Length: 152
Image 1: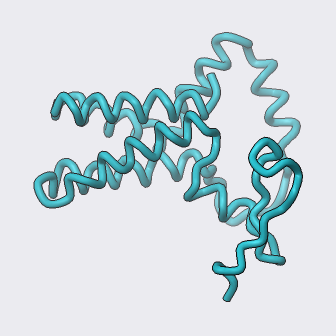
Image 2: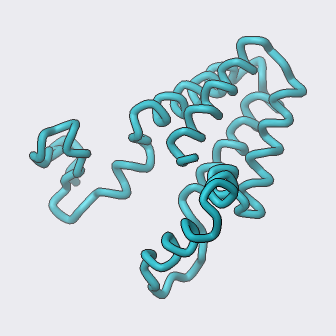
């Protein structure tokens, strides 16, 4: 299972939970995302290890860069922590006032799962010194797109 498929599943299940207005299911979803963020035992990684064994995990570990980072904290872990925090604040604490944010988060995760592009993370990950965002080749056919509106 890939992270992309997992985002699609979580996004669609979040939209289903919101449509059915099931508070216990939302609590389970938030608890699942917090547990994944704290332990870093992500469901796609566990499913891949069950399907392919430790070979897949060792290939991923050998291809990663070994750099000196201050914190060992992955972006997928941060995504789960941020989304669970947003869902907790906007659905559990201020559900009547901020009802739009969980719907937005569900649609954002579902579209990120369908398209493979997370608009929040993708632009910052591929931002270079020339103020360009490199999109996948299928989107722009190999040409880079310069965003003049985002320049300082």
